[in-house]
Image 1 (cartoon, rainbow, N blue to C red):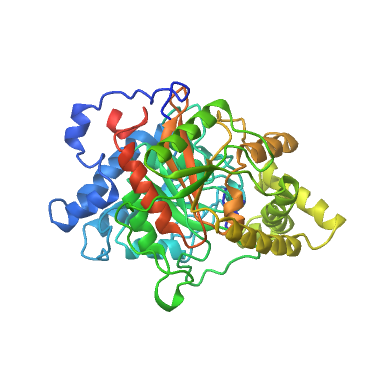
Image 2: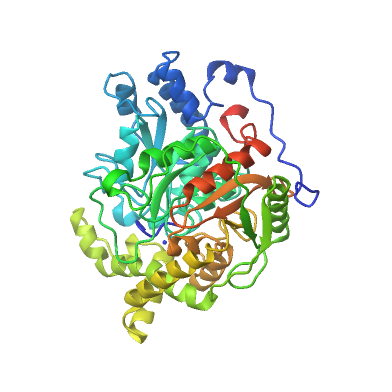
Length: 504
């Protein structure tokens, strides 16, 4: 969820999902679908294909797959084809590669609905900083991807945009809030897609869609003129199918030179020989263990790391769950409270009258009410949360003095069915379900620490289960080097969802 834009390969793990044989006809007509972004860019760089060929192939996949998965909610194909046919593509590392932007980020001249009826008519008048960097990297933007209202849920099922459906099982969710991005990449529409993360919104879709999802350190990335909100803990990057694509996206998106808060990572090219001390737990901050399938998958990941020579040590969560949730949700719910109070004014900026009841979903209105009650009972919710967040940063800094990396689940259970966490579920029930399901990711947003979800194992039913690795602030290189090693040890490049371009 993104609050910035608006909050052992054992029998127990089960065999990997069986996927249908690729269609020869489709493989012949689209030789790019199995290639990651780096490979596609290399073809353009060597003059073996044109950007227009890549773009047309991606458009064809979107047109074939999107009716079933609802990943892409707005297209700009004519603009993409025009750019791909021109000499105006910047000469970046992804020159000519097709890309999609999440509908929580400004893309000049295109809709910016943020998944909400309240902003259904809004058009962006500038590019967000992450979009600027994407364009500078040479990416050709085809459209925008699905998101829950203001990114406030760990599932993508907004009233305005409809539910994004998981290519591994279209009855299940894609995660949130970058659920459209997850579905687009898992189905093979594009090799990677723009995503953002304020409470797990990159890692959750990566986990449930079988992708690589890195949440960088807070303050790692270029932000241009974008002004952070009080208590802002969100970051932007992408979900991808390969570690090297994620490494290069980080390279082009990070701050460098005098603007850098951390030593620049640069492009991490492969694994390291360094052996790591990895703290491991499947228990969440509330003291509840992961489900049987998730625990088995994480045990398998820990065993894989041990087999590769890393030291695995048992750890325990050190956060007080009640205190953490009180402050995290205080920040998370503050923006909904502002939106409810100003819904009518926001509507007038689009030349229409819109009440909060008409323009906002029940979950958003429920969060606003929750916040108002907290603030009325004890004013200063946001200020106290910011003080608490600063403390958590210090505590995680100390925590990673004794560990190189932490390994935990991303989510407490395998991917849930659509509707179980939809915004229309009764508020108290949805609140309980959400904080239980998404109980391993938001602490890294608060602490500002980088964390990555890797698609190493699956449930007994063949559903993806992400393994989350985290490390100290500024330690993205460590995570990427470990990710390269695990990718080589247990490759996932040829593991495709049933509803994907290779299976058409």
